[in-house]
Image (tube, rainbow, N blue to C red; front, side):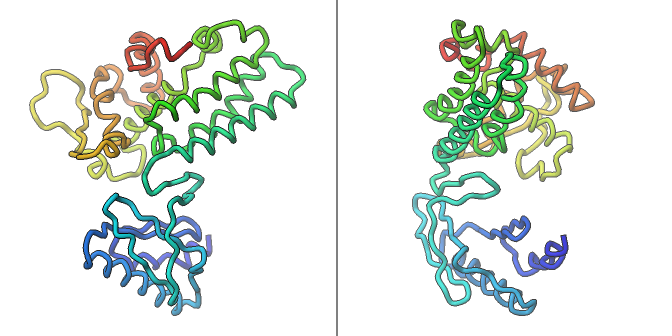
Length: 300
């Protein structure tokens, strides 16, 4: 806490985007011309001045530059007279962020970790009733697959299948369950598919954002209210932003728009988070899994 207070005025030197968490600081901006490059390099110099004033020193060896965009010129930036290394991938709060914005490497990482936890559960538990195993799976394995998933949720079918394979294996581990189909196993255990849980989690996050439960800039994420006269739908409909590539299409703020706006008013216009979850689960059960684009064939 004292360190966070000590570096609190660091943001005063930066006019571009900056993010701080403990001793990990990131700055960035759009660099599509010489002016953008000079602006970012100038701010790195101002951070050096701040560090010298307060007898701190940035570790250039641990600093890296992550370039985004196919036409990015991958310019070189200097800190303390040394060039920062260009990185293809960087871990940020346990999320593997790739310069291509593809999530395959992060999916592989979390799937491997979740499989390792399943092996631990399988080898360590002697009394293997499905009730005990289910609680262990929910507490130890599944969170690995859902941490910050709104940010990195996969859109390629191969990545979706990799993640789902973890839950498939777990349900087959249970006594007398391996002869059932995947859908039958989920129904008996009272579980959604992980793909369906990600969709549910997206909708819960949108509710938190539009209701002000999460402290984020709502108007920056969504041009919030649809101002035209509404003849159908609920009062909290959102609008996506314009985009040109498929990558932007799969961002959280784009992929949730259609399904959120399709929710009935009785689900969205409730007063509490708990009420929304209850109404949402009831609505999804009534509508059916297939109604959310999860074809029955993916359950087998």
